[in-house]
Image 1 (spheres, helix red, strand yellow):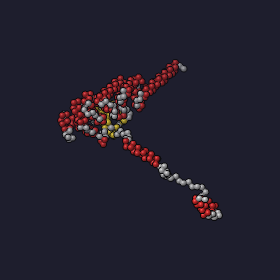
Image 2 (cartoon, rainbow over the protein chains, first blue to last red):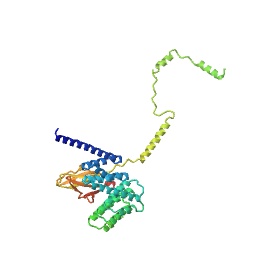
Image 3 (cartoon, rainbow over the protein chains, first blue to last red):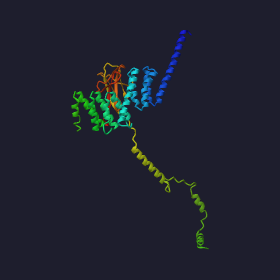
Image 4 (cartoon, rainbow over the protein chains, first blue to last red):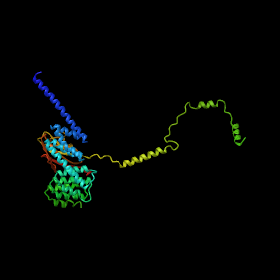
Length: 227
Length: 168
């Protein structure tokens, strides 16, 4: 056996050892995630994507840390998972994905606090509403608008409130002013509109806004037919 | 001799002897084995009351239970049509919250003669975000959609709300 052969053999043995070690680490991370009670499919997908993107186990663990925290705090983990999955799919650098996941976690915490302040028990569709509120906040809908909506006298029903938050987010994304959005959201709740009616009203506002009309004139016409 | 004994005596005197061979003829006429009587559908002597009552109570509870039981509602799926005009593209993918941003999952069909790529995807009702990936490198928001949202990674996602018209 020549020296060259010896070097190649040593290299191959080293590679095999490193691979085995790395595989053990990935398994340990998988086990840790599953023991925390996370959804197995999401864990597999996240780990698979981490490996596909060439991340090290430690980097992937750093990505999953906000998910672990969300799980511990009984916040919707799927909402953090989806952020990580999006970042990985778009080949974003790991530190940026960690930051985005942490931002999502903070947003979920804030949403949870806001809702609980208005309706102390975490029942029914609370998790759902936390997710929608967080999405609206991330889309730029001001916290005060949502707080004012949650704290309206008379309380709220989860299902109806989720529709109104979705509508508020859409109006925010199309550039309506926050005070106008709050006005419309309050209208929806006061009038106890169904989901179909809320969708129609939002479509109408968007269509009229696209024509260049101002909110006051759109709003003046909005309820004419209903009244 | 009292009256009772007299009566017994009179009855015994009244009985005549059976003809010769009578017993053998009767025994020959009988079947070799006693036929088993089929079990009756209804238990005799009022034994049916307890099981029948128990059955009626069970049925009542079942009916009451069915009245209160609501099977877990399946999430309503709505077929949604995606379309992108990308005449020069070799491959167009669709990634979104509905497929957990998986690559190599939903590939659009096309291009047609006018350069359009299309896919109809069954989506659960609700809010979704998505983006098109063209040729594995260009990320494009849906130019036909009304609502877009910065993704925080320097790109823009399209936001849609999908609801079944019959369910709205």
